[in-house]
Length: 248
View 1: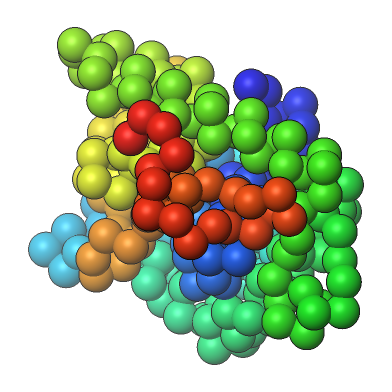
View 2: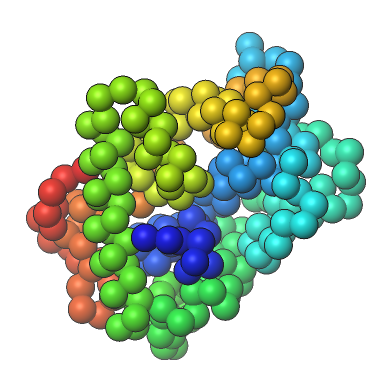
């Protein structure tokens, strides 16, 4: 599946696949991880890792990046000051103090025109900031779940680190969506970013560690779906405890 061809960001896919169970806080963190993975923001080498703090600055791909409105919630501070250096936690705190999680979801991400073809809105959805998938959305989500399950299986059972990295390289920043992300991939994020720099021809740059929060928080987008049994015909997540198929 080519998410780039669909013009969907990881946070938008997470919103569609977890329609009524995801919240703005998780989507904020998906957004920041995406911006770092895509090197719109880069880490400053030599950060004090004893304090588990990473300092971010404008990245290699900052200029020319066509940001969505919900991404501008993070990038606005760098637009105003190209020399800004700020920790991941401080940046998240600034965004969270400027905009509520509900507003981030309802007035920014949910209003992006890229996801409009996949949802149908009714008054109840508008009032409770939820979404209902239309037929096109249900078809897309089914394809996404199948693809992510297959890629998650390939990652988990790869026989070497190199093979695991092949999966990450193929998926790019969409690896954020794998159920393995929080337990297995996020702890290796520094080495993944180092490998990405090698792919970009920048292996000589200083390494830096990434700490997005005090604890693992980024549940892969399939976990709740698998626990709840998938998506019902209306586009809402079902309450069944059946895992809907092969576990991840």
